[in-house]
Length: 444
Ligand SMILES: Cc1cc2nc3c(=O)[nH]c(=O)nc-3n(C[C@H](O)[C@H](O)[C@H](O)COP(=O)(O)OP(=O)(O)OC[C@H]3O[C@@H](n4cnc5c(N)ncnc54)[C@H](O)[C@@H]3O)c2cc1C
Image 1: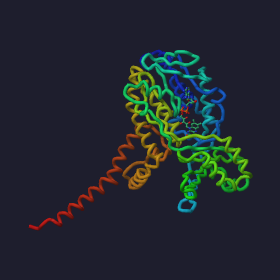
Image 2: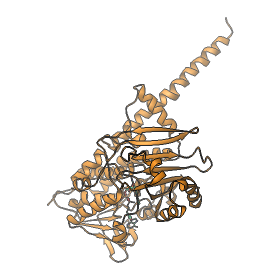
Image 3: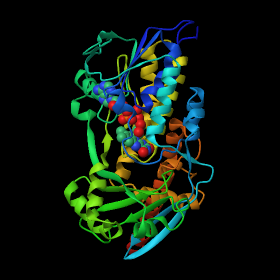
């Protein structure tokens, strides 16, 4: 029997609401601590395993890979991967199309559907079960049980709310929490997106393929110059896709309605495809989503903890899944050292939780386009050797990523950057002002 947090035997029941990547990783990591693990999933099994179209390739950080290795999921995940060949970004600026290439050798990308399928297989291998089509009705935060329509009252020693961006657990926690209002546990819509596939033929292939799918694996077209009032961007990625397809991802303002985007899209792509009817059909078969930002003043209440997107979801940029997986890893470490589950939850919220909230506030500013100054200042300060490298600034986690150390270092460097760009100029200006004033003082 595996050691539990306080002694030598397992402890009670772990209930996980939501069986997305973070819910399943949590189950596989924490299973040895509990006698029983109950995984609840709102979707049907068919829909859970279904392919919902292409979105962004997921690049796991070394820290996530270590965790996935630990739960035996990395080897099967690596069976299907695509090399992250150069990223080619096309950006139109002042009427000119510029091209930037970012190479990431030795880095691999995976699609979400594949990750779901492989983690689910690990769940089955470990003889755990996911209850599909569930309907969680309520959580009793005082007496530690969760009420599900078919399963009735499920008692728990720990409940993880891993139910994604629109977390029902978070909503219930907001209502039950003595300190916080529902508004404080809110989500904010930043952008919307639509993704669909087109056959890679003729002009479309010439324009978006560059003749070499692997090198031109990610093509990004900034159309703001062409449609200044509409603010939408077209991103096309061919990573690990069949040669015959081109994946189109359109990201647009939250205010822009989808009919307008569809019309703009037809105008933009109409001339490259065989017929507008085909374009419409592909569009209708595509999948849409939203970039939303989650605000949570705390991640836990009594024996309930929010994890993954339910806790700290924000504008998707590849870092969400990694933050979800690594924060569960950090929770596991804290749990191992704690005397009780409530103590571990409190400790986690005050340490890792604080770092996650800090990063989320940065991500919100980035999502709203308000972090550009900060990013530029960091780049200059980095070139001057005043601050170190911060992969989290660009959602570029090639380095090992440990949220707490990384955010502590970021906060420290942010102070240096502010001193360099605001503090020193203010002191110099004050000195010049002082010298100027002294010059005007009557001479005795
Ligand atoms: C469709 C989709 C595509 C994505 N594509 C990418 C991508 O390409 N690249 C990338 O980096 N990130 C992507 N993301 C984001 C990324 O998958 C998440 O950041 C990451 O999976 C976090 O995982 P999670 O388990 O916290 O949340 P989720 O992946 O959202 O999983 C939550 C799970 O909980 C279930 N659930 C919700 N409510 C309830 C309830 N009341 N009761 C029971 N179950 C419930 C949901 O059905 C879902 O299975 C995508 C997210 C989604 C939803």
